[in-house]
Image 1 (cartoon, rainbow, N blue to C red):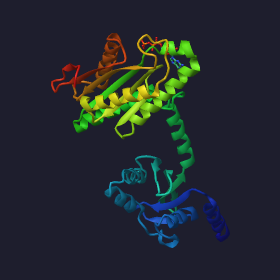
Image 2 (image 1 turned 30 degrees about the vertical axis):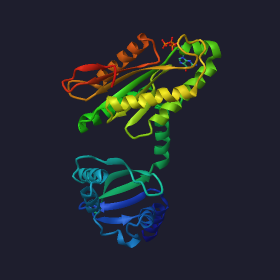
Image 3 (image 1 turned 180 degrees about the vertical axis):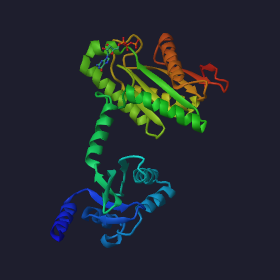
Image 4 (image 1 turned 135 degrees about the vertical axis):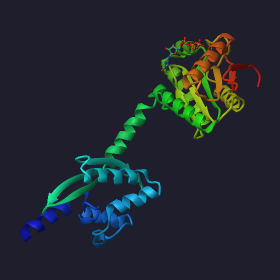
Length: 318
Ligand SMILES: Nc1nc2c(ncn2[C@@H]2O[C@H](COP(=O)(O)OP(=O)(O)OP(=O)(O)O)[C@@H](O)[C@H]2O)c(=O)[nH]1
């Protein structure tokens, strides 16, 4: 019996997962080698000090300092102890100063000598999580230009709309369409067209160098720039900067009837989010303005802003 207990201890100590066993009140009765080594490395408690610590109290203390995962872990463990659920799992981030890390905590019960115990394991899932995040990021990027795609744009627009609504700030959206891009493709070839799209994307990326700004490739030769906490006056300045920079790029487009280089048209709409309006209204407005800019001769910007009573008003000059 003595021998088999030692055998089991060795087995548990060779397992990578951090394992602890708690009793019904949350007091730790056993930890394996990985658990205590991790504690040592992360300035928690050293090996012999773990037993007799109340793990639920640790979760509660973390929760009190605002740690949402500490709160969830405490709640989940208590649900298993009370028999409300058979087991509990929680994926949570545990980043250090040096690296990003994620773990899955799993809690399951067992009985021994007429007493109930609970095994808590923490498994390092960082590699899988990083791979998932990389795939997620790829799914949000446009393959040609390496800026965000339409799907990501929809998410960011909604996100910025909600944030601007909460903070009672304006939000501006510029929809940008290249002029006579078909002619560029026809004259210089599809690869030159691709190169032009990449240059425009990089230009927009440079203009989005701020946490509340997002640029995306919206369609073939159409781009969008979301500007949170920016009114139409300031957003227009950003668009003027875009016009200046596209001029400097000087991408030849000899087939264009309006200029010998690539130009663009912009529809720029500002909104003050209310519960009467939506992000889709803003997008539709910017789209309509773009259509007008095209109709009015291209290589221009049409701007509109929203008054507090939700009416949109056209601004020819700001
Ligand atoms: N090279 C290249 N061309 C693309 C890509 N996506 C769309 N296009 C081309 O973009 C062109 C868009 O043509 P139109 O919609 O007529 O637009 P336009 O010529 O810019 O005319 P206006 O917008 O009215 O000024 C088409 O010729 C498409 O083939 C792409 O990824 N690469």
